[in-house]
Image (cartoon, rainbow, N blue to C red; front, side, top):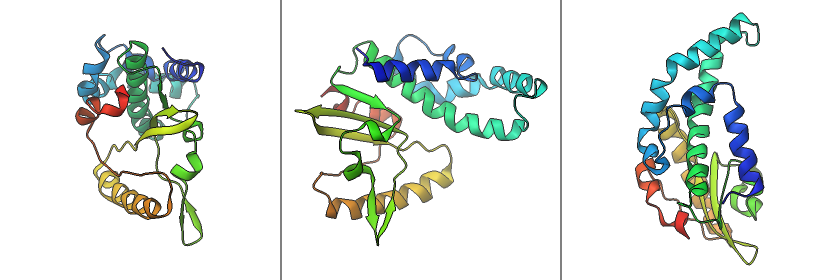
Length: 193
């Protein structure tokens, strides 16, 4: 069962002009669709391109190239978030596990996501947070930082791993910096707690 914030997030994703051609290609077995994300995005490229061109013709957007770049990253994270929310809606993820793309919704987000390094506050790249609570306190939190390019995977992931290690030493909250592929994530136990 989705909470009101999750229902709103689902509706927001579905209302983005470029998402319907993508979502139309998703099968009904939402858990299995995580293995097909790349194929779904590639297969929807033609229909999404038609929408971009129509918006250029209608002068709703000026630069089709920039729109494509923006859509690639957004569509990837939105599709993953949409799949997680549908898995929860179908009962594959317990109702006590919450899914958000807004870090501020996570209890104790400041202690978890803001890292003080030499007097400067660093905020890690949090695309999706999946968390559970116990007695109104954070129990588990899985942070997904989604990368679409090799440069991001190599450079940014290493940077945030180091910053999270610094944070681990100064935080009361236990931080584990584990890196998972989508296939591994499907089987991760935090989703069932």
